Structures are given as structure tokens and as C-alpha cells.
Length: 245
Length: 87
Image 1: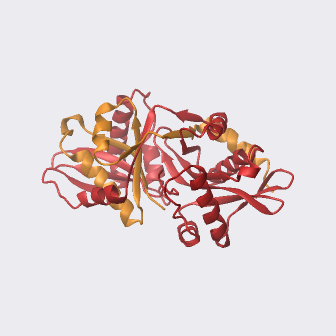
Image 2: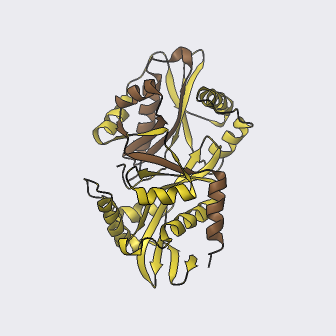
Image 3: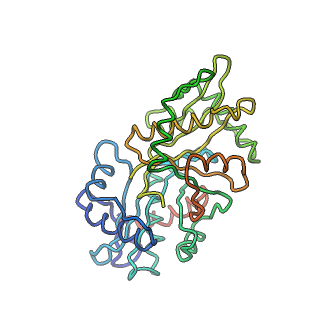
């Protein structure tokens, strides 16, 4: 628990907070002007956020015992810095409680919480026209204005997954193993070189440490032909979001 | 709603334009779906025209979203702020 100012308490959500989070999440979607209603129900909150393998962690802000906001984050991996990170899926502060540093306090609590499990960076997406939020985000971090996001969902996602049934006769795909780290490192170095980033040290060891230990931070798929490795992709399968906008 | 985030995609230059990237993205979508996921998301440099053209055939571009992050220094500063508030 955290308390940054009198009467403000930041605490971890419990399964019993399902209805509260679902309601605040619905309000968040509405405030953002989303054309679709949020599908984040109390039941989904309990199913995905608790149990043996929780997919996210959630912190609630309360003023004098009444809830005014929440932050939800999930594990992520950063191949620019080769370290674990957190992805902030949701940040919400009730309209009447805005302008009092509660959003920033929730972000800081999420960072402090993530750091306990080894995270050293944080990523999130914002609505380009949400200027008040961007003001806060530029203070605590920075915008990657040179990046464009892509999302496959609904029919596109199903169509894409179905393409995986088609086998090529010149290459085949398989999940990576620890022995593939040197190849992954080679590909990652080539990729970073292509986008003009400086070379990094110890790629192979860091990929082995973070991807193939007891609590892997990422998964990768490799394509290979009979003669050579072709390519690799890192898929960070455990990210969670309210829903892509 | 859960989904997958794609971080890196690389194909050896000699093997480009032969369906390898599409197959890798598809396999990632499949892996995400098998874990209960309902979407796959990724990002690309805005000036990478080739990649963007290709990605538009598989997915929806989300130009209204801006990606933000805290690098290790910014992250440490933020987390330190909260550390002093622990109760």
C-alpha cells in the first residue's frame, strides 16, 4: 500500500473489487469516447487477474475510503534495453478527483510494484487527442511519436491465426529453445543495426537470462529452412489490455 | 481482454518477400489465441513505408494512439517517488 497525501490510499485490488473495476473501466471507455462498450466484466477481472497465473496487477486509489481511480499493469519485455518492463494497460481517475496528482501517484505505485518483479521500464499507449493525459505522460516519461501502432482483432485476428494452418514447403516454424539464443541475438543485432541503433553488449546472455529461465519474460518463434535459420520473432504473449482502441 | 504484443520481427534479407514474416505473425497470433488472447498488437517506425504497407494487409493502423514509455532513468525516478509512500 502507498499513501502520497493525507486521505489518499493506494492499495492492491482484490477479487472482490471486480464490479468496481468493471464500472470504472466502463467509465474510462466512455470518457475516451470509445464507440464500443467495455467488455471487462467483474468475472473477467477475477479470472485474469488472480489465481495461479495472474495476467495483470491492479492498484486502486481511494480518498477517505472511497474509490477514485485505478491502474492496471502487466508484464512486458523491452528488447531495446534487454530488460523486463511493465505495460500500463489502464489508468483511470474519476473526473471529480482529477488535477490532484492521483494519476501520477498511481503510475508511480505501478512502477514501484513492477520493479519488485524486476521491471526497469514502462510502456503504455495514449489517445493522441487526450492532451491533459499527455501533459502528465511527458512529465514522467516520453512519447515515441515516430511509432505507429497496428492491431489485429476480431475477424482480422482470426484470419491471421488461421494462416498458421498453412505450411510452407521451404521453411518451417518452431518455438525457440535456449540453444537458439545466439541466433536470436544475431537477428536482434541486425534489426537494431537496420534501424540505426548502436550495438549492444551481451545480447545472447541477456536473452537467455530473460527468456529461458524459470519465469520467462518473452516467447520467440523461429523460422528455419533445411539449410539455415531464416528469421525470428519475439511474441510477448502475456500482455493484456482493456481492448485496443 | 488479453492479447499478444509483438516486439521484434526480423527476416534475413535474402528471404524477404517470401511469406516468412506473414507466417511468423500468424504463428504469433495463433499462440496468443491458444493462450486465450483476442488480439495481436505491434508498432513500427512511421517512416518504414514497406512494413506499413504490409501490416495494413493484416491489421488496422491505429494512428490515433501514441505510444509512450519510461526509459530506465525515468522509470527509476517514478518508482523511487512511490517507494517513499509505502505503508
